[in-house]
Image (cartoon, rainbow, N blue to C red; front, side, top):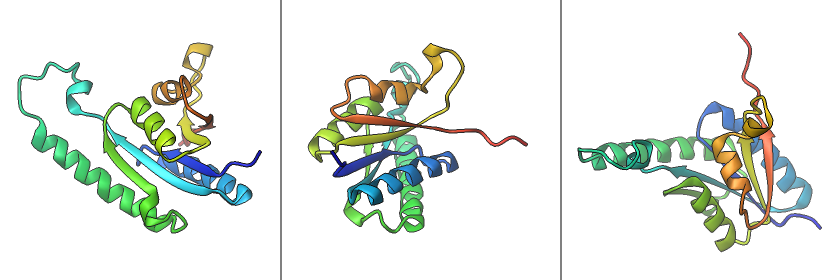
Length: 147
């Protein structure tokens, strides 16, 4: 059965290009809709939730920077329509699963660094997204360039 709506989860680094390209290829081959998502994790989560200062201004700066980077990606990939990119706060696994359900996505594409060993096969976000996903998940192996 062909895919009808593909959701590509991006981290907004240059490493996300192969992930977007794979999502685009699959969308074109299946005549499917293509959407992008980036999740900005709350800074308190990164610090274990116990932070003795107000991080709201830093959090807003992080969100604004993510918005600019996502806009730049949309310029680079014009086949991603204006309403088909999503930027939100939260825990990546939960937000990606929720978005996939809400928008009836039948494939989520994520990047994976392919670390050694079975337990490190997927990066933490890719591994999280895989478990409990409401649809198929494709992990695109990311290879770091050698200098």
